[in-house]
Image 1 (cartoon, one colour):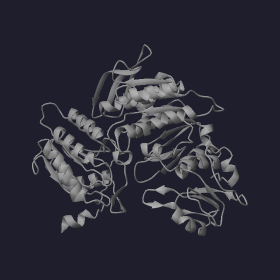
Image 2 (cartoon, rainbow, N blue to C red):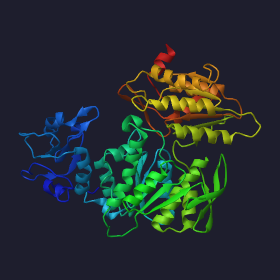
Image 3 (tube, rainbow, N blue to C red):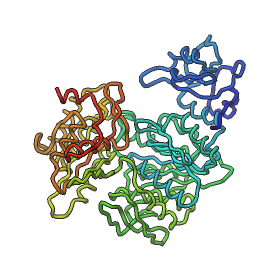
Image 4 (cartoon, helix red, strand yellow):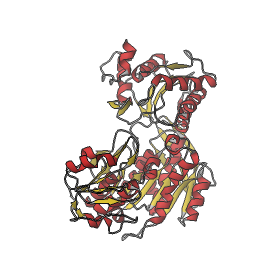
Length: 530
C-alpha cells in the first residue's frame, strides 16, 4: 500500500483560507486524525467543534498518542507541538487531506451523485456503464468503496466518509491506475465540506425531497446544501487529462428550477433527464414486472432500447440519470451505456427479494424517507397480480434524533398506500422508542388507519417482521423498509449488529419450519419476551 508523508508546511502551500501560527520544526505529517482516540505518531490532529463534543478538549490526548501537530479554531498557546488556527476546522480539513495525498482528484475524472433517494443505485449504474466502456473506475458510496478488486466498508450508516477517508480512497485509486471515480455525495457531506477538494467533473442530481430537516432546518437550506455540489463543480480547475464540466438534473423534480438557475449563475453547463418529454433525455414504452424494467431512451433524435434488473418507475429515472452522465458528460456511446445499465444485477437492500419458498413475496428495501416509502409502496402494489386480491404489508420505523416530521409523514403514507402497516424500531438512539411509535401511530390514525387491524405497533423489529409474515397470505407482498443494506441499529449509544435481510430470512425460516439463520439480537427482544 502506498504511504504518504508531507512536511507540515507543504499541506498549506495551496491552502485557500487564512491561518495563524507557525510550523515549528516543520514535522512530517503522515496522517490526518479527527478522533483523538485514533491518533497515531505523525498525525495532524484536527479539532472539530460541534456534534456531541468539542475536539479542542482532546488536544492533549491526541498529542499523548503521538500527534505531531494540531489544527483548531481556538486561540491557544503552549500546546507543545505546532498549532495552526483557522476560522473553520471542518472546512479546512478537506483541503489539508487533499494536499497530504497529492490532490488525487486532479488525476481522476470525478462524477458526483447526490439526491435524497436513488444515490447509491445511480452511482452503481454509472460504475457499471464505465466498466462496460472499458474504463478503469472506482466508486465510493454509502455502502462501500470499490478500488479495483478491493471492496472496503465505508461505515455502518449512510453518509459520505470523512474528508481524510475520501481523499485516501481517491489516492489509492490513483495509485491503482484508475482514471474515473463515482463519488456518492450526501447533504451531510456537502454541508460539512467533506468532499470540497474532490474536484468534481460531473454532477448528477437524483431528487431533493423531504429529508434531514433535523440537520438543515428547512427544505430551502437542505436544497442549498445539495446545490453546493454545483458550486464545487464550478470551482474545479483544469485537469491534465481534460474533461467536460456538466450538471445532470432531474427535470421531474421540484428542485429543478433552483438547480438550473444555480448552474447558470456559476456558468456550469446543465442537461436534463426525466420521464417528461420536456427533458433532453427521456423514456418511453416503460414496462416492468418483478424481474426488471425495459424501456426506450430518447436522446438527440435517437431511440435506444434499454433494460435494467431493477423494479419501479423511479429506477427508470435513475437509469436516465446514469445514461445522461455517461453519454453527454463522458462521451460514451449510447449503446455501450445501455449495456452497462443491463449489467447491474441489483443493489444490496434495494428491493431485494428474499425467497425461501414461501407463497408470497418478501422484500427488503432501503426506503427511509417519505418519498422513497411512497414510491416503494406504489411499486409493490403495481407488482401484485391483477385480480388476485394480494395485499401490501409494510414494516418500517423512523429514526430517533432525526427529522421528527418524517414520523408522521411516513405513517400517513403507509396508511394510504399499504394494506397493513407495522410500525417498529429504526435506530431510536437515545429517544423513547414508545414515543416515536406513538407519533407514527397518530399519523396512521389521522389517515384512517385502525390500530390492530390496518396498523400495529411492534417495538422489536424482528418480531415486527415475524408478524408481517404471519399475516401474509398467498400472493401478498411483505416489505421491510428503512434499513436496506445497513449492518447495525442504534439503541441509546450502542450499535447492535443488524441486517434486515438476515432478519427476514430468519423469520421466513421459522415460519416455514426449515433451517435458517438466527434472528439478530436487539435489546427490544428482552422486553418482547418479558
